[in-house]
Structure formats: structure tokens, C-alpha cells
Length: 353
View 1: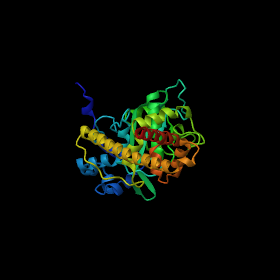
View 2: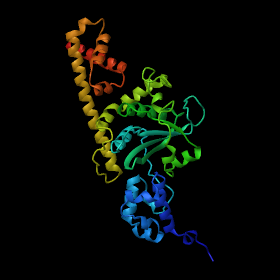
View 3: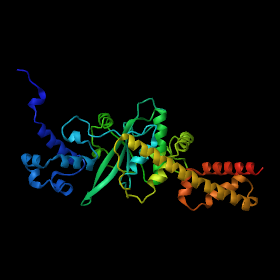
View 4: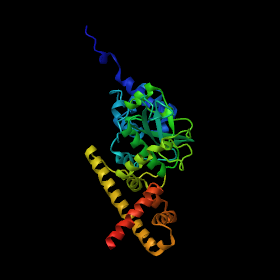
């Protein structure tokens, strides 16, 4: 008699197993489930037959939404727990995504096959970027949702490395806490890249290791353990080319831990259109604010320029006098600000001639 494997299994057992796994792998014990899903009682948890009665499509959907995992996986279909999040060559998507999250301190982690990253090493240095979003508390315990950006990041591949450094630099300005790097086994990294592993147990531990990801994106005056500083000009060029500071400022300028209202998204095309519209609005707002700062510098120079030995010294002094930290962040770095202000002054003087 022909044996058909799926006929010999009990799919309901797999649904129950994955339902419990989704909580336990997020640090929630079985007996704590009713704290998050009141419709699932302790008596239902104690009996498989009773639990099946309450595991309705609505409960499975609520569980999937709560943890950001695929409902199909909960239903026993396939091995992929997470939908892939990708932002390679589209960094605006990353900021659009995290703007919808409820982020607190230490919201980012790097999981890597190597603890010490080295762009000159011939080894394949793979990375996964994890965003940690707090969804609730049970007593003193934080319960988090995890967002995996695992789009084939390789430290020894320049395009992905430069983008990661740029994201780290911009993120560090808005969330000035370390971005720790945790070394994990390659089989775990494989599973993360395939969306088949919940990273709760992998992102626990010391959050201020040496080095952290931002140390690879800061200069020596910004980090005492700055790494690969010779590549910083390329990082700054990437940030400027993608207008990442203005995009991040427009999307993330809100109190830490306060998530914006959810925006409806019918499909991926609508979501991409929203990203593009937000990026365009951010760029327009940034451009207007930067022009205002340039105009203020020109007025400052015309009134006080004779008191400085050079135009560069005047631009440097003007930048130091800016009290609004957001205005300083627009330029990413003092040297970049001085160049921008001097170029604005030069253009102004040309027009006057």
C-alpha cells in the first residue's frame, strides 16, 4: 500500500507545537500566555483538545501580528517564520520600517559570524541586522518583537559594508546607544538569513562590547575605538547621496519609544509609494531648513566676517554657535558643514557680481 507522508502526521499537533514555540522563543512561558492572549485560558493550555478549540484563525492571526511572524508558519505550512525585510540599495526602507516600531534603548543588534569585523580579511563575514521592538512587559520582563534585515550583508563586500556603516552612523545620532555585535554559530546565521529562527536567545548579553557597529562609522574624535576610519569619507558620501539624515529626521523625530500611528498598507506597491513620498517630503523639508541655515550664515558673514582671519574660520565659528542639535546633525560632521557654508557663500558672492 502506498504510504503518503502527510497522511501519517497530525497537522493539529504541529499547530499546537508552533503556537507554544512562538511564545517560548520570545521568552514567554506557557503559563504566561493568558497575560498576552486572555482568550487562551490556563485550562486550555493544559489540554490539547481544549487548546484546539480556542486556536481560531483570529487567535493565530493575533499571535502572528504580536510577534511579527508568518501566520502560515503557525498553521504548520513551511519552515519560514519571518517574512524577509530587505533594504539593500534602498536605505529609506529601513527608516520607514523602524519609524513604525516602538523603539526603546538599545534597539539594534548585529549578529555575525565574526566578532571582530575586518574588511581586509579574506573570510566571508556575514551579518544580520536585528531591530528589537518592545511590545509589552510581564512584570519586570520585557517582551520584544524582532525584525530581521538579512539581505545578504557581507562585511568584505564593499557596497553592503558602506551601507551598513551609513545606517549605523545615522541611527547612532537618533538612538545614541551602542549597536552591539554578537558572534553566533554559522548554522544559526544560516537559519536567520532564511527567516527560520527567532533570535531572542541570540541577542541577550552585554550590550556595550568592544567594538560595536557604530565604531566602524565614526571618526577618532567621536569614538575612542574607531575602526576603519579611512573609509569614513565614502560613508559620508553615501549618507549625502541618499539624504539619509533628512529622511531619518523626518521619520524619527519623535520621543524615544513613541510609535507613530499605523499607516494602512494594501500591498507592497502602496508601501513602496509611501516610502518614496515620505522620503521626498523629508528631502524637501531638509532642503528648506538647510537653505535657511545657509542664509543665516551669509548674513552672519556680512555682519561679522571682518572679525575673522578667513572665511573658513567664520564658517567654523558659525557652526559652533548653532545651538539646535538637529541643525548640526543636518551636516553630519563639522567639516562637511564648513564646506557647505563656504560653497553657499561663494555662490552668493558670484550672484552679487
